[in-house]
Length: 285
Ligand code: FE
Image 1 (spheres, rainbow, N blue to C red):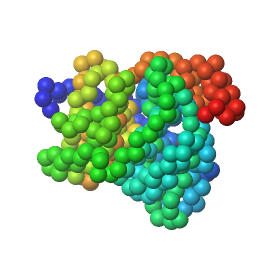
Image 2 (cartoon, protein in one colour):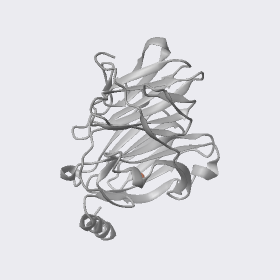
Image 3 (tube, rainbow, N blue to C red):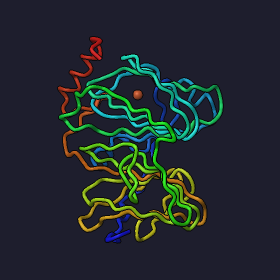
Image 4 (cartoon, rainbow, N blue to C red):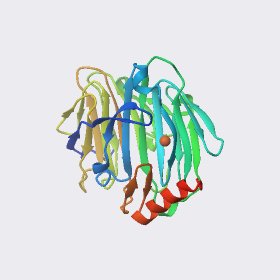
């Protein structure tokens, strides 16, 4: 990596919290509410991985959102999405839906399969105060519309957001400049990424064991590693041990604004959250 060799170390490992959401979908909440300040602009990361229909089949029936964006990335399984404005889409394996809730919408996310594996992620990315009441919108990104690259030693990277090694990702955002990479590391290989020191970032390992940072901290399957932020640390290095490893590298520019969350509404103040509940109850979404 050119001019970048001062790699961030792991500040903390996080195991996540098994929970259920929607109409009883079992998932692992990796990024929980207590980490929202530390990982600003990211508000939540859920990981779902099950081949038992009872764990996912009820899905997420109609519910509202306001004030942020949801990013759903499927590795296996199909999810049908419908919203109050009449939009509809089908998420397929390898596809991403980047949804801007903005001033508000009501939607459902329901599995479109009776059995088989359901595997993927939902990340919540905050919107700056000035954009929280923006028009809602979607981007359904097909698997072949996500730029991919293969590096030396067979390291494969899908560039969902941001850019890496000269490849621009599918999504760019001005305020938070999110980086969202899905990285496949054959045994014994590594990957490096420059990252502005002020960005917050983390690694989530979903297969194998990773070695993160210059000190090669072991991060096990289903663990999140929060990356330290220090002025001189301007890059990230992740490696695989002696087994193939798959992980997400996610980072972004912090908004440094107040965060007020109540369930599916994330605003800057308690008053705005109360307003959101009122607007929803009065059918203004
Ligand atoms: Fe939702």
